[in-house]
Length: 416
Image (cartoon, rainbow, N blue to C red; front, side, top):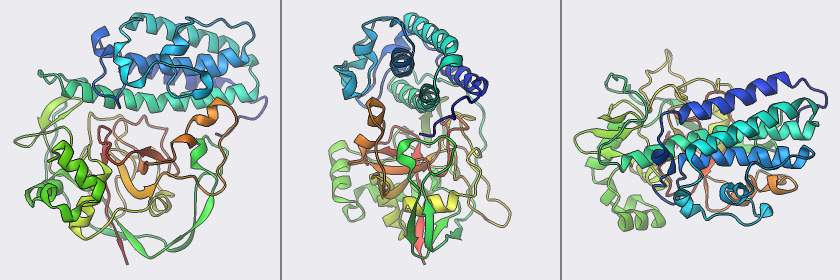
């Protein structure tokens, strides 16, 4: 994480802090206490837990550790809302977060207000390392804003009334433009973060990689193309799948992307709607993405290929918290890479491993990313649930290969 210089003005940080904290409340504003309490599966967390955990992070690492005389809002919250920080001691089991019926949602909102006021009051006198932790806390909260939405989507998809979280907006449907290819750079290239702007620890250090001649598809794979894969028996052809992936398909009776319904319907944050054949396919696992790429005769891009191609593209572009789901994108004039940021996170062929020279930070904050560098695959870009301003080419999202409750899709690559 990049540290703010000593003596740097705090007003931009305060504005960013207030905006980030307000957005979380806005995303959860319409939820009932029941909506915010239920946990739909072990990988998802209740909305109320997300609201409280992001507050615990600030209370623990900023107020407790850097503000003399600060008294915790509630002594029980350190146990209830710690996520995975071993250095912070015992915590409530992740799989049982839905059992936290109390504190109530209103009590959690009071907790947020208390911590926000304490951070705002303390900020002018905080040292640079504490201000850097507030900045980290803002980006940490952005990640949980996206998780709040995707976890809520999974929860609502199990409700027999198909409730909508966001208002439904009429969508056009169309055919996708033919797939085009954009040649990537080859030879030596630089990837990874090395600037003064914020980045998570796992994004650096910057280092040199060697890229063989390749090309990336100029757009994402669409619903219509994925339907062709389904119709061709892709989920029944063991030859297309990795061994673990085929076992996953068989064990879980997987036949289509998560949230697909019959008759070209799909469930989203805006309820049950008709799938747009030209919109990016989403809610697929790495196993599915890899099998589809195999079926086409192409492959998934590596992290380095994707990042080198995205380096000159505006990371604030694309659908990022603008629509309830992925939307179709028309090809740019002259054909160039589109949808690099927004709509869906893009699976890569790269495992989530440390960049050369990576060192975890000291203390509990060092547990943020490094301890998860095993059994995970890298995703790049951003999704329709990513708050704008938090994505960048070096960002390394990661999930196990079976995960698909996030807005995850794919872009094809090929060798030249």
